[in-house]
Image (cartoon, rainbow, N blue to C red):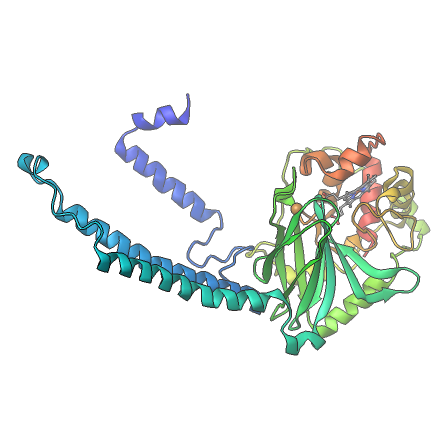
Length: 417
Ligand code: HEC
Ligand SMILES: [Cu+2]
């Protein structure tokens, strides 16, 4: 039976109980309505650009609230005052009509113009302010280029040149210096995407053949959530990214580590006898085994979690890693993914040179841990419908992976710190 046909049959009290239960459920889902402090809230800002956008929102909100109160008040007054109170009223002549009263009409026009002006002044100021880094700060600004792909983001660092290679390149996690304006050049490889980090800045579209930009600044070091905000195809809703803001010193260390080629783990002969058994055999593709370490009430604050991710795991097995590196070539992964210093050459997929040190995989969708990595490699199409790894790589190249092969690939990828 359909829900719609059941509802009217329930008693008033049952319906009230259901409504209350639903509200309690929502409240229990970690949505804090009063503080509005979710990962992607625009109501709690962490930088000057997002703050100026929030201020425009408040101005508009207050002006429209006043209009609502005036219109609602007049409506309520008229409804009560001219209500038919008995049978005779229903057939009475309508009260005197004031249509065309010049005083009322002119003041309505005047009030509308005034409200628009009150909204326009801060809006135009904010458009100018958010458009580019303020003149006096331009010297100090840091520059990165973000490129949208269906359905992930590439980040280039033009000021961090690697000899014989060019820009430092990463994917899906944009690391920036805190307390300093960052100018983000916005590009796209395919369709229109939109770059949005709600607590810092946005949204500005990434348009084919048109160079856009925005700027943002994180006041303090932190871990921020970003999202493509322009419908761009099948997996648009899960096209995400992260912004990690670090102190100037941490940032310099990060750049130095990322400029280095991929990490190579020395073969340790003892590891040959200690190969872990196939780990991912009983993996169920539709099971969302999230242990979401990024959650606001997670045990480890997200930025600390990111910092821990920079270190190699203690239980690495060098033999398994070497096997994974070989499989990375045999399974043609290298054709789409760059692993600088190793065999990976491709540029159509995310750069994997330091994939092990990122906190997310699959365009900010999954937490980067061995389970989720295995899940992504075994069932990319279920995790992220239509993704280009599956549709243009796995299917045409008949890539299938046994659970032993996945264990080795996961060990290899996670070792790339
Ligand atoms: C046809 C090109 C292609 C091939 C072949 C391919 N990939 Fe990918 N891969 C992609 C694309 C494109 C993405 C981004 C998908 C997305 O997030 O929408 C991706 C994403 C990934 C990611 C997540 C990266 C991140 O930063 O989020 C990993 C890890 C990965 N691939 C590993 C592999 C491995 C291992 C193989 C070989 C078994 C492989 N890929 C084969 C194109 C390819
Ligand atoms: Cu997009």
